[in-house]
Length: 85
Image (cartoon, rainbow, N blue to C red; front, side, top):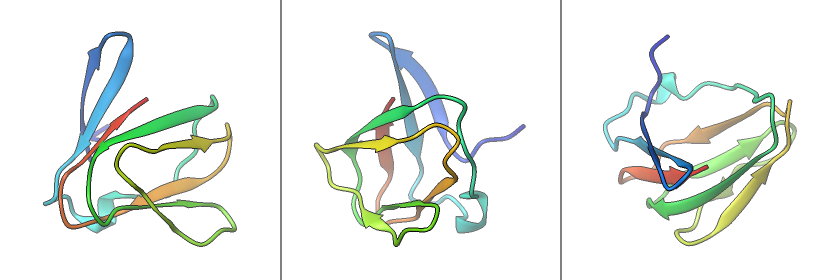
């Protein structure tokens, strides 16, 4: 399966980077088996949308919680997006 991000491990965390050139059609609705807490290291204009909610603008330096089994997706911004999980 091809993912719309590159990923590496650092200090026990997953670091994911979404390119500014990613095709928006690759950013699909999905859900995770576990609760997720994501920290936004870098990115401008990106949004997070959880099922049955409006998109929320992602801010550098902020943390967001995604409950397990909740459908969600990211919406493309102007720059690359780097998150820590």
